[in-house]
Length: 472
Ligand code: BGC
Image (cartoon, rainbow, N blue to C red; front, side):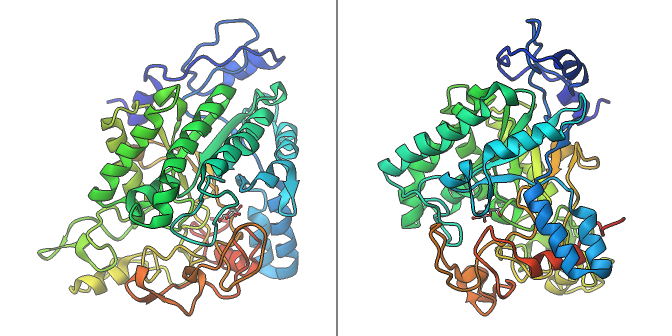
C-alpha cells in the first residue's frame, strides 16, 4: 500500500502556475525540487511550486537570533554553554511583528536584510526555505494582553494593515532577486482560533471582521508573489482539540480561505503550536480507558481527546479535507519549546489506578494546566527543525519548524512601559492563580521581559530540558 506521503506526492496539482521569471540556476533547481506539482513550461521559468516546500531544502538561519544564543553560551560557559552553541545554527522564523520590523528596528534587521542573508546562505542548487511570520492584524491578540498589536480594530487600522504592512512586505518579497527562495509564511498566530473560542469577548467581537478580512487579504497578496507558501496558524491541541472547537475551526478556516481570490490554492497548509508548548507526543498516554473511565476525562484533558500535537494535526487534517481542502495540504508543528525533557520527565506509564494521578504521573507535559501559555516553567526545546518527519503519517507533516525563536519571551511578568502596544498579562505572572486555569497558578517564569525580547533564563531552561536532549 502506498504511504500517505506517497499518495500526497501523487496528488493532483493544486497550485497555480508560478509566474515565469528567468534565473541561471532554474534548470538545476527544477531538477532538485521535491515533488514538483505544477510543471513550469516556459524555458527559464523559476522553480515550479512544490507540494512540500521543506522537502529537499535547507532553512534560513537568523544570524540575529544565533548571536543571542552564542552570547548566552559564552556567558554560561561549561557544558551548558556547549549545549547552547550546539543549537545556535538552528533555523528560526523572522517575525514581522509590527510595521517597523519591515525596515528593521531595535529588535533586529529588516526584511530585505534577512532575505539577502538568505540568498547568501543558499548552498548550490539546494533550495532554501525562508520562514517569516505575518503578525500585525488590527486588534491583534484580542483575548490576551502580552502581544496586543499596534493597529486598532477599526476601518482605519485595517487600511493601514493592508497598505503599510501587507503591501509593504509583499513589495519586498516580490523582488525578482528573491524568486528562488521558498518563502514560508506563518499567518497570524492566534487570530482565527480566537474567533472560534473567544467570540463572546468584546475585544474579539470587535476584531473578528478584521481578522477574517485581514487574513484573506494577506493570503491573496502573498499568493500573488508566486514563491510564497502560506500556512495558517491553527493554535494547538489544548485549545482547539475538543470536537466542538475543532469542527467550527475547520469551518472557519474553509470560510476564510474560500473567500480569497485563489481559494484553497492560496494556502499550503496549517501550522500549530507556535503560541504554546504542547508536546509533540505523549508517549505513555493513549485515548483509551483506565478501568472503565476514559483517560480523556482526567482533569488535565477535560474530555479533549487530542493529548498532543500529532493528535491535533491528524484530527485537523481530516476535518479540513472534509471541508473541501485538497488532500495535498500539509501540517507544520512548531517544536521550538515543546520538548519537556530534563529530570522531571516521566520514563514510564504510571501504575496508579486513580485517573488523575495516573495521567499526572504519566504525562510529559509538566504544566498545571494546558492553557498555561506564558513562559512555562519546565519546558524544553523540542525536536530540531526538520522536513517530512517520519512516524506520524496521519498528521501529514511537511516539517517541524521553530517559528517562535526559543529564548524570546511570551510576555512580561510585570508591567513594563513600551511603545509596541504590549501590555502586562497576568498569565505571565508566576504569583497569579488564574480563573482561566481553574484557579491554578500560571507556572510562568519570573522576571520575564516583554514578549519577543531575549529572556536568557528561559533559554537556559529550554536547553537544559531539551527533548530530544542536545547531542542525542
Ligand atoms: C511577540 C512578538 C515577537 C514574537 C517572537 C510574540 O509573542 O509579540 O513581538 O516577535 O513573539 O518572539
